Amino acid sequence: MERKGQDQTKLEHIDKKVRVAFGADEEGLVEEYDRLAVQLESSEESAAPEGDFERILKRVEETVGKKHKSKG
Image 1 (cartoon, rainbow, N blue to C red):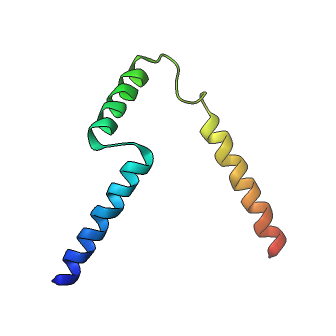
Image 2 (image 1 turned 30 degrees about the horizontal axis):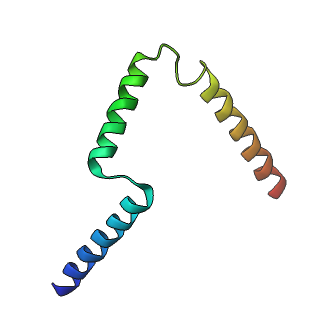
């Protein structure tokens, strides 16, 4: 069980380093999330123009298909 305690301590240490490096704490992240959620809800624009995902997916499939055919 000593190993589990060491792992938890290590994870807490890493978590603290990440928070310090990025200047974020849990409360700050929650506030930023809430602010962005309100901003997205009030935005009338969609995240991406209609059909963009389908066009991108088609291009990826075509590219992968061409690469697969040339190797086979």
